[in-house]
Amino acid sequence: MYFLADPPRRKRHMLLSPAVRWRVIVEQVSEIEHDVVLETVLRIRAAGEVSPTRIADLLQLPEDLVRHLLAQASTGGLRVTQDGQLQTSASKVAWVYRDMATGELWPDPAPEAPPLAARFTSRYRAQFNRGTPGRPDIVECLLLDTPETTVAEPTSIELARFSRASNDPNRRTAIVSSGEECLVASLVVGLTAGCVVQTTRGVPHLSLSQHLARAGQQYENVSRWLAAVPRETVPQGTELPLRRALSELRDVAGEHTQAGKTFEADAILSRVELCLSRFVDQFRYLHGIDAEADPGPGSAAVLGARFGLTEDDAALLAHSERGTTGRKVTRLLLAASDVGSPALLGLMAATVQFTALAQTTSPSSAVTTLVEVVIALCDRLMTSLEGADVQQAG
Image 1: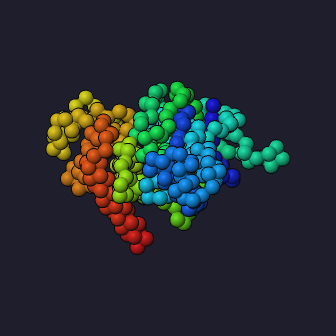
Image 2: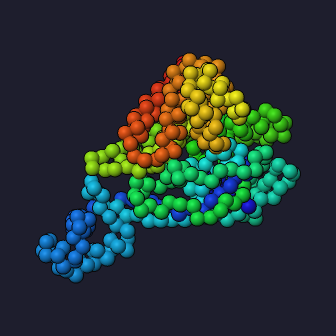
Image 3: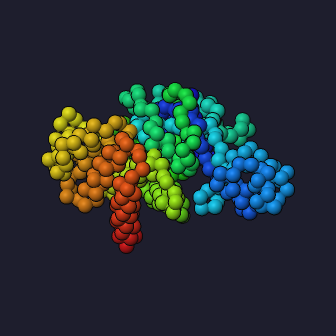
């Protein structure tokens, strides 16, 4: 079955990549319009007064009105946050996808979509029509094969990335089905530096893009297909994946560090993990590092010798599962030639700390410290990227 990442019309080239999908229930929170009376009633209830009669007496309001407001809050899932914001929470069923070639989760859950009516013209080439019989709009597709046949089920930390309600102890973000193999159809855009695979939000999937580029170097038929992808310019205002991940980490960390609030470690660590993963992608792109070789049996010893890691910390990285940030960082460290790079050393230390904290996922000051370290680390890389852009422009 083929599931479309909702590309715009008039785009002619898409990548079909093997993936596994899981149905999940995602708990989402949204702010609603300010209502002084409703907020006051809900604050009193949150303080422990549950009697509509007593609340009506305290506020000098008709009891029927108070009962109506409480019923409205119950039906709509309304609540007042500790900082006074009126919010509503709701659950929705969606799908999360993990790419087989890279082992990474796609950045957003996706709604149910009908299968594509793709017609294979050869073993690795397919077409489908997004137009009408009278005005066909044929999309050329390339199947990117991979020797991988299994992927890991999403972890609680990865799932926390999909819910803004992750700090709610009653959240219901959870997997509700077994993994199903499928093909994900993704838009391929030709840029000056090469072809890029886009995600559902139009953000480049750098790991999958690099995988596609290597296939183009190895196979002539893939190279010819890529050469036919029309070249475009990057739209103004397009954000780098690292910058977007960093902005989300700042936002979520800010929400959980307000006075009087406690935080759910998964909610913070999920964004930390995404930032570290995007850091690896961007660092590899900036320095042209090919880091795809999987760690071998002696990788822990190599990491310890090259970077001065303790035996336990080296093993923590070297034994990371495929598709995790720990595995991506290990590949980068083993492939990098500049072992004294401050950026690599900072990335290594942050990843070791993240991997250790991910095994406990309990609120602690160490999580707050890690957030500060990761933000500073990513900010420095973003500054390097901006400096490189200025030099190229000059």
